Every structure is written in C-alpha cells, then in structure tokens.
Image (cartoon, rainbow, N blue to C red; front, side, top):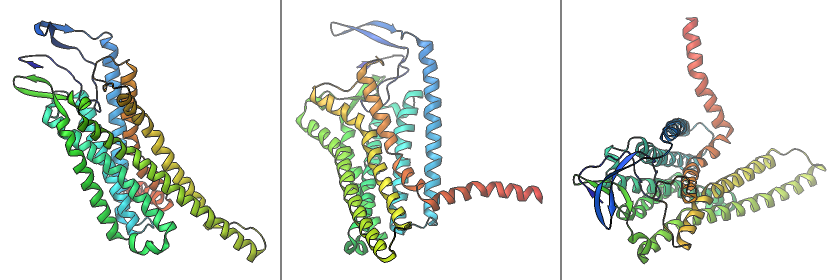
Amino acid sequence: MELDSVDILGAKLGPRGPVVSVLHSLPKIQDGNLDAPTVILVTGLAQEQLEAVLGFVFWTSITEMQIVAHIVAIVILSRGRCGLSRCITRYLVSMAVTDLLVILTAVILNRIVGIYFPFSFLSKTPACSLSTVLIYSSRDSSVWLTVAFTFDRFVAICCQKLKMQFCTEKTAAVVIGTVCALGCFKSVPFYLTYEPLYIINNVAWYCNIKPIFYVSPVWTAYDWFDRILTPCAPFLLILLLNALTVRHILAASRARRRLRAHSNGETQSDPEIESRRKSIILLFTISGSFILLWMTYVVNFVHVRVTSNNYFTGFNFNDPKFILQESGNMLQLLSCCTNTCIYTVTQRKFRQQIKNAVKYPLNLMVKLVHE
C-alpha cells in the first residue's frame, strides 16, 4: 500500500513480531480505489493505553533482570572459579552469550522498540527484515548450543573412550563456532520473506509477509525445514540423549549400590549416588522445560500449515489466533533464556560466586565506614 501521507502509530511487524493496537488514519478502500482518509478509532483507547504502559513496564523489567543475570553468569563463568572444566565453561559461556543476544534482538529491538517506538529507523522495512534474521540466528544458535552441550555431557558420562577426544576445550570451540555460523547462514532467507506494509513518501515502513510465502512450495518447504530444525529436532535429540544418559546413570548407580552392599554389608549414604540423582533431576528439568515452553509455538505452526491458514496480521487482539501466536512467541523467547540459568544455578560453586559478588560491595562499604 503506497500513501503520500498517513498517521500511523503502530503496525504489524510480521507474524513472529509484535502487534500494536493504536489510533491511526488510513485511506478507505472502495472497489480497489483509495477514497478520502478515514480515521479508525480503537474502542477502549484509554484502557489500551494503560495496558500498553503496563506492558512496557513488564517487558523492560523482565528484560533488565535477564540482561543483568546473563552478564553476571558470563562474568562468573569466564573467571573459571566454579570448579567446571574448560570445555563445560566454554559451552555455558556461549549459551549465556547467545541467550543474551536473543534478549537484545527479539525482546529489545523487535518488541520493545517496535511496539513503543514505532517511528524509529528499526521500523523501516530493510531494518526490521534484518532484525528478523538476527532474531532467528541468535535463537537457533541458543537452541542448538543447548543440544551440543547435552551431547557433550552424554559423551562424558556414557562414552568414556570418546571422552578424552571429544570433551576438550578445542573441540568445544569448533562446535560453538560451527553452530553459530550455520545458524546465521540458515536464517538469511528470512530477509527475503518480507515486503513493506506501507510506503510513505517513497520510504518503506514495517514488515509484512509476502503472500507467496504461504503458497510457494519452496517457501513452504523452508518453513517446514525451519520448524523441524528448531525446535522439533532439538527436542527429540535432547530427550533421546538425556534418556540414554539417565539409563546409564541408573545402571551405574545400581552396580555401585551392589558393590558397596557387598563390601560393607549394609547400605550407607553415598555422595556419588546423591550426585547422580541430582544429575537426573537436572536432565529431566531441561527436557521438560524445553518441551513445555516450545509446545505452543509448534501447535500454532501446525495449525497454520494444516488448516492452510495465515499467521495473524490484524488488529483484533481478542482473536484466538493472536492469543495463540503471541503466547507461543513469548514462551519460546522465555525458553531461550532459561537453560543457562538452570545449568548454572544448580551448581553449588556458582551460587557461592554469586554470594561473594553480592557481599563484596557490602564488605567494601563497611570497611570504608569503619576507616
């Protein structure tokens, strides 16, 4: 749609981006022709303004906490004082970095800036198309680094012969670099899926999915490939690897109990068994978190493709399609920010480092006061 002048306070940034309910002016289209501008008033504007303010406070608060948490995790892990091997540390740091990039691109650049600062240069079609590529690149890297780390732990626990060759710092660096490079390369085609939603004074604004995206066999195949690659394949791999790891741990634990009972004549508390029990809980937590937080996103995709429907692009925010789509987007963004927290917070030495970091400025203040 090409317009000479139009008052637009918000727009759709694509089926995977934010949707804004606003007061705006648009030309009235009758029989394919542009008629005099008609002002579309959104009912309940005061209520929606309040909801917008509350939404802004919510998103910025959550984002600030996530950014601080991930920066703290990166700094603490990089210092190497958590009792973890260099291989594990590299994986956890890379996961924390990609999770942070997901927050910066998908939440700040796309949602907060797109919704509450709709006239910024990021709302221009080339910029929002590029931001989509960055979002998918960081998201895919985050998810597949989790898979790579899960595989590394599987090899370390279940494949002792491969452990010395695979579970090394050098191998981890190669895997991390490869995963991130492939994630970026795979996401580039998304730049070509969008067209301008409006053209104002020869400037393309906002991103709207091209109609050919829904009917072209090539784009349909790419869309299926994207969903299979993330999150279907990662979920199956994480579930399979964790199941094999748990089975190995349980078998080793039973053998250890029999050995200790035979040598001691009674069952005693075993720190090794307790450590393995915690590992099982951690693995199940990762798998359960991943499937629950991605389920809505997958259901929405299957609904769109099976019913030959389109992604939500309107302004009726009570539409079940909008609720399903945005719920899936929010939950999958949350999923990309939880795995690093789960891995690190369960480590006792990591928690101790956090306590030391909190105590340090307090102890420094007390020392300065006494001096």
